[in-house]
Amino acid sequence: MFSYVLPFVFAITLCLSATQAQSPNIIIIFTDDLGYGDLGVYGHPTIATPNLDQMAREGLKFSQFYSGASVCTPSRAALLTGRLPIRYGMVSSTVRVLFPFSLSGLPSAEITLAEALKSAGYKTGIVGKWHLGHKRPFLPLQHGFDSYFGIPYSNDMLKNPEAKWGAARNYPSMILVEGNDIVEKEVDQRNLTKRYTSKAIDFIKDRGEEPFFLYMPHTFPHVPLFASKDFEGTSTAGIYGDVVEELDWSVGQILKTLKEEDIAENTLVFFTSDNGPWLVKKAEGGSAGLLREGKGSTWEGGMREPAIAWWPGTIEGGQTTQQMATTMDIYATALDLAGVSLPSDRAMDGKSMRPIFDSNQSIRDVVYFYLGAELFAIRVGKWKMHYKTLTPYVGEKPETHDPPLLFNLDIDPSEKRNLSVEHPDVITEINKVAHAHLNSFVPPPSELEKLDTMLISGSKKYDF
Image (cartoon, rainbow, N blue to C red; front, side, top):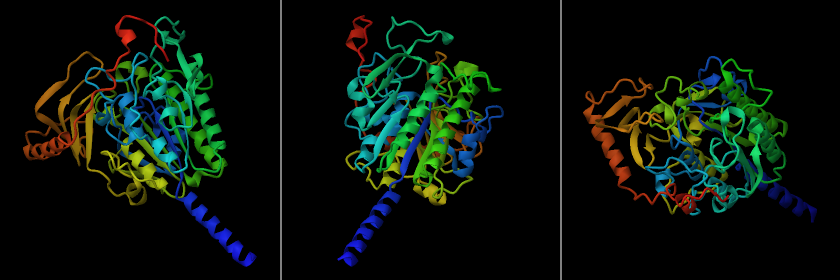
């Protein structure tokens, strides 16, 4: 009897082991308003980021990685759906992001990364900033996450106009949410990064037997800036440096935990940012390095982000890739690794990055640059063409370009030399790509423009 049962049990064990090996844990660390030039490994001379530098030495650094938008809400929507936000109303021509008075959020019809991975048996958790709708139907637990700990929107947004203002730099107090409930009405933002890190480590250690997906969208370095007492005043680069260096510490703690738990070789960690630096905040706004402009624009500095993929034993360390990729590709990559098919009932914009991980092969040739509900620019190969440009947060209106501006990003990543006169043929070809894209779908009504009727009527009471 045992001569038959034991081989059978052994075969089952091998099968389960193979399944687990094919379903790695996935961690996405998503900072807020971090610039392309804000890390040591991306060339910053005074902000010390030893953990991210080591992560890049042990993993894969991207030099041409793009966010799905240049502001918070649509960029997060793009990451979690693998789709351009224009396809499901998470953009607007008049409202850039969701606010505490917004009525809507990420549509329930969207299949989030958490929902897709749960179908493959993953445990799912989010620690950090959500910003995809603070009303109960739109919170993370209603979008596939098993647990949630963090703030519901940007840390400079009022929960209640009548609430007292925080002492630090005259910013309002911020609420903290766990699950579907407010657990603190006035969270001390100085300790947020440490508390997020502790919660994330607890999630990893309490993972159980199933693979897990941890989404860690940090609050910082979005203004207002806060660092814990262990980091405040320690960086040569001022308070912004303090904040980024504490984020670097947090990344180090996550990677250290994975190694101590002996699961590093079965865990993909992807680090990037939601959009570029908030340059109008000056010393507190970060740097896009050699790239032009920052947050709120479709210039390179608004949407090209630092990005590092780390997976010991699978991704060869010490590499830098020039292949283009986007946050929407993280979605497709995670599903690919988990053995889950992309949704077939809708247009998907993400592509799996496994060819880049495995052999540095190209996965895409086109990137679309939307500002609100308009296509401002498009990149095809080395060429980037701007129909409109905007200098954000200074009260200027968009400038329309006829002919469009044209830049060769291979030799001019700073977008300083317009080549439209020299290459009208390139403009013609890129126009064809753009028009085919725009004619392929009809954008739905904007979710961001659904405002609370109480606000419109003059009431100042906002329901969570």
